[in-house]
Image (tube, rainbow, N blue to C red; front, side, top):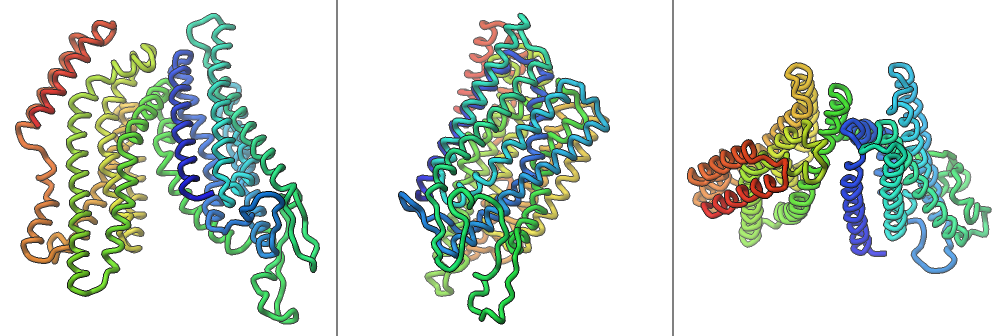
Length: 565
């Protein structure tokens, strides 16, 4: 299968899983309380991420660099000696996530059994989530082989089916629990149990699907070599020692020393490197959940989880495609221009490419600045209505609307950070990337301190986490913008400029004042915020009539502001 068709299938799986997950959340929210969402959406997701990410990510990244081991031909598959040697190295390492997962799950279980009351609803179901994570890790060797051999279609079908089963099982368990208890919303124990057993069903379907597929494939696989006896068919999926005789085949039998091992030294070293990076990535990615579990109540965790899920959908749908497109554009355009020849024509072409890249970057930053004003003027005053429509009054009456209002200010920062870091990572040299790593470590430290202060000292709850994330994003944006200025030579000879006039134009394009709209536009946005704030306070959103009137006021303000622009 080609990479293009494989990528298309994976994109389809991504859309399918997101649509199903969103539908699941909307149905499940009608059955559960804020506490249940906090336990499932924050605590248990952090548990799953800890086990799965730390167990398998480094091995996945290392084995991605290996060549394909199964020939792409129909019917019986015959491996060469070299293909078998590489295949066995991959198989051996592919089983390591299972061992890592067992150790991590054992450590987590020991921690909670020693420091916490295991008999709580979340405690008893934590064992089911850990079991689901371990079952999913049992499928990891087959997942790695499917990626290595470009079985994209297999992944799409199996993971899509598993996600469908998970969604149906969750809603079915919740509905059955509500009917049995004869209440509007299920109890905390039943709610967490529904998600736990559905996660286990997902993992079982995933494992069964991969087992059935690879059993059907490998019963036709053989290793062809008349000089040595090799395992055949399904026995090829069992870990065993391999030697380095293929690596030293140029030496004579008397001079070469055969070494046998289970874990290939080169791949193991690479996996260790990725493991070190993975710990840092894990801390950055899951920092908000770690703060939530450590310092805020389960109900507020539920509010934050709800807001984070809605906000991430907006960010991914609106900004992620632009970020990925700009990353490719900057990488291809500016990398090519930096390696151009030194002739006058080549320099002129390189200057034009850099000017075009700068034009795109500044255009996106100006667009995101305007979007920030829209989120500030309208999003902050419609969060209660939005949550009431999508989730229910049980969530709109809590802290979720206030957290979502703060998140409306955070979403544009995500967008700006995405495009500025896309530029930096596309063209920055190795030493700048190393500095960025150290800077991000500092950002994470500031995030933890700010989050703790906002929650523990100021009592901001979920808003404190959003505030800490916003400060983290601002620091990362500052670093990336500094690099942009250095790259285009602010304060020195400007890269991409053919004359002093071009230097002045590039400096003008990077002037931060250009990203701020004129006074009339700012006044219009401030007025729109004031009108919609008053509408939210006076008209409200409790009844259907109030919702329609409040939406009508916002629509009028939106068109007026857009007309002023």
